[in-house]
Length: 266
Ligand SMILES: Nc1ncnc2c1ncn2[C@@H]1O[C@H](COP(=O)(O)OP(=O)(O)OP(=O)(O)O)[C@@H](O)[C@H]1O
Image 1: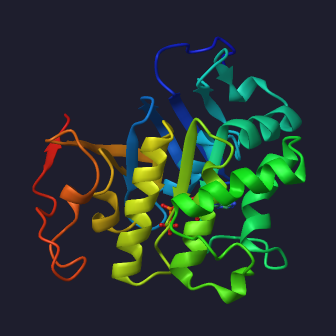
Image 2: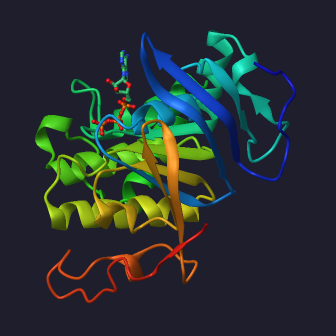
């Protein structure tokens, strides 16, 4: 693995990623870059390498070959492969946010405590962390829900808490793995709307792994992975992300243009 940082204007740059699990080649040489504030969906069949790619981009897994360089909003580029596990874990806490299929909120903590925790782990006082967390719950339409535990929230509310928790530290990049996989279509629509809008408003880039073209349509760019390789790449023709991309029928009464807005990028 090279140690030369791939410094550049991109928020995240990955080059030549290879990851094997025994005989299985999960990633066979993937290049991906992500501009500041850009949203990217990763699609592909089951077992194609989507989650492995997300985990390598986020420094959760170490690739067998290739480099991942994160450019924080301020400061020098960070070559994730050259960092030890402790430092990589700190970089994840400081600069990355995560939303998973089942939220993975801590069940014994309230919604407010769940959202306050990342700031406290970075050294904020409980009062400061809870004040910031309360603001994020408000932004996600969860005013008045801070005292509830995850078991007392609907699936959509729990995912909105997860989005607040992902954004509370003002990350450079938010990673979402099937963020609507456990939700019905209308609730998934609302979670994707909030996820893309709040992430963009916070200036963070977004990577969404999904099987669902309706979910992918919320992102500006889409890559398709097959057998560990990027086999297709497309960018929304209108250059936007958000409600204009919502396929007709996703929510009753919402007109939309489906995937017609996609244009092949190569
Ligand atoms: N920890 C692991 N140990 C062994 N093999 C693994 C491991 N993680 C992933 N794999 C294998 O690597 C390949 C890619 O897996 P990955 O989870 O990245 O696919 P995916 O596209 O995210 O699939 P899905 O859509 O089903 O979640 C698969 O063949 C999978 O079985």
